[in-house]
Image (cartoon, rainbow, N blue to C red; front, side):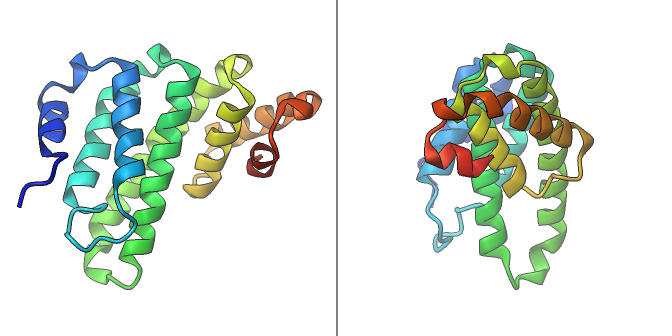
Length: 174
């Protein structure tokens, strides 16, 4: 049967460039929040989610400079959340290894780009936004990427004098 997300997915794949940065971030965030952890119906991370993430990354990457800090934070958090669910759902499923690794590679490149943009605009981010991106990058296993290391180093240095503004969860994410 059709999932409730199919009309959104079809619109994004065919006309994604007309969506605003806020809309793109909201779509991916909502998908990450609403997609159940278990994949009983075959939708979960499955083909719909991979296609949605690929479409959002493809449409968003050349436009990352148009995204507000909160939108960048939402994109990073959403991708990391969906990626962690993929890894949890795919453990022991060798037959899906090829598609998973391609999706992970694509997400790695996208998150490295996002980290570079966020690094250049670090002073515009709230404490929560910095924390969310740091968590997403660490959770997505992209710490070997140069852009990611630059962002995390700059974020830690910028956060040090502002630690009083960070909630405990945000500090633990850094």
